[in-house]
Length: 80
Image (cartoon, helix red, strand yellow):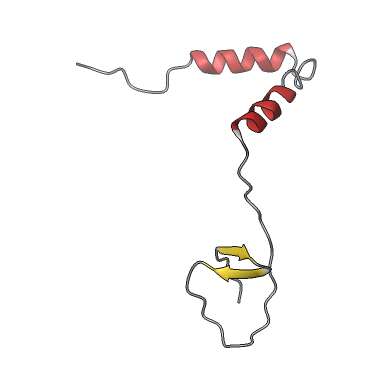
C-alpha cells in the first residue's frame, strides 16, 4: 500500500497529523519532503541570485514568437 500522509517531527519521532490505518508495530518506509519556511530576506536573496541567468540563452526567434503569441486575442470581447 502506498499512501502519503502529513506528519510532524518532534523529539526524534514522527507524529502523524491524520488518521493512519496500520496495525500496531507495523514497519513502514518514510520518504521525507521537508517544507522549510524561508524568511523574506532569504527568498529575496535567492530571487536576486537568479537575475540574468537566462541572458544569452534565449535567442531572438523565441522572443519574437513569445511577443507574437501575446498579441493574439483568445478571449471574446466583453460586451457591456
